[in-house]
Length: 325
Image 1 (spheres, rainbow, N blue to C red):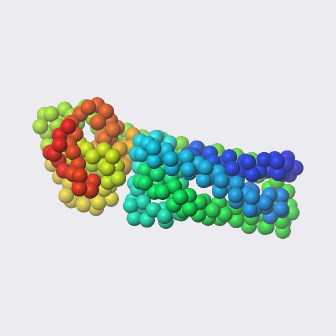
Image 2 (image 1 turned 45 degrees about the vertical axis):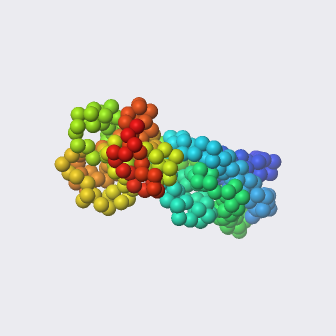
């Protein structure tokens, strides 16, 4: 156990700070195994539980503050960047946006305990104008609870290992290997799941040029805007004739969707995850002529295709036929 102990004694707090910083910046390297290992070693007083908590908290706050100011400066564009890095991006973005619409403080406190929301919550807080002081208080509280809970779990196992010295020796010999296996397994799982999701998305997409031809030909296409109301505030436009539904309400009110024409769904994230998943849900409900729009709203706008203005009274309804651009 000499080499791992010496490494942690020399670099343990720096390692904890750096690992938390990297994970909270969005790199898929889970910090929980490192925190558990540090908590276990604190049972032997080889690492200070309090200093480990401070190191983890510092790494989390630095990373979260960076994302907060990026979100304040660049708004929703940073969320589109995170869409490319996240496993189920638009689901997490929408969940976080919904939470911020109701209870900002609680969202920041619990975000660390929900996969992917830990990275998304800070830029959404900045985008929505939350003061930096309030952000630090509630984000810091959430970080203390999460880091403390994981360290505490490690401390519990450390106390168990102290009572069984043979287990402690075995853990000292193999903990680095187990940590590496755990991290590698986590990354492989994410890659496999992402590949499966992207395969489903590719099968359900409609090219923007094809939709444009249908509209120019006068075809009666039922277009649905799935974007969150917060996404409409900085860019209050939508596709011609589009109606606005949340994915949840669209699935619940599927009887309102016409069966005699093609239904096209679009969102904002480059991977079209929300639109594609909603399309697959509607397929299962018996609506067969439904597809997601490749590239979503951003690709349609980039190509210079026509847009309708959104009613300025709240970004909750999309009114077709007004302010054609």
